[in-house]
Image (cartoon, rainbow, N blue to C red; front, side, top):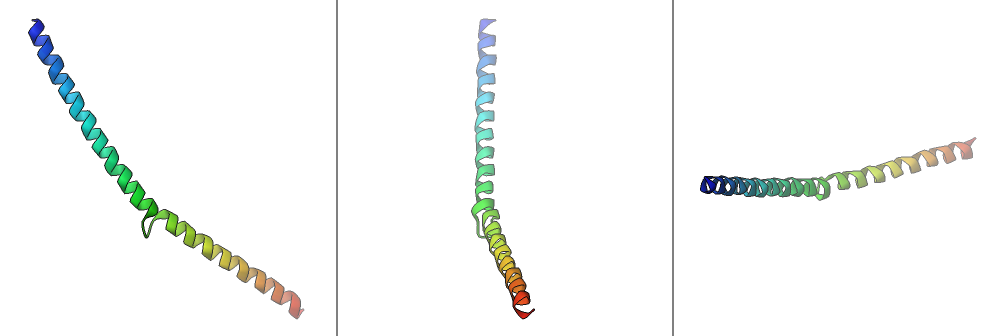
Length: 73
């Protein structure tokens, strides 16, 4: 009877180890995808930098229009 319990415990431990390895592999895949999405050429960080630059350009254009209107009037 004790031998059967030992075999069951060994099998359960093996399944647990395999599940842990699969979980770690899945987490590594998800982490790599996230890093690529953040820092890639079309990544979120690149797009946000472009958006900041465009926003500053539009802000300067508005200021130039306001200054131009004040000078002409």
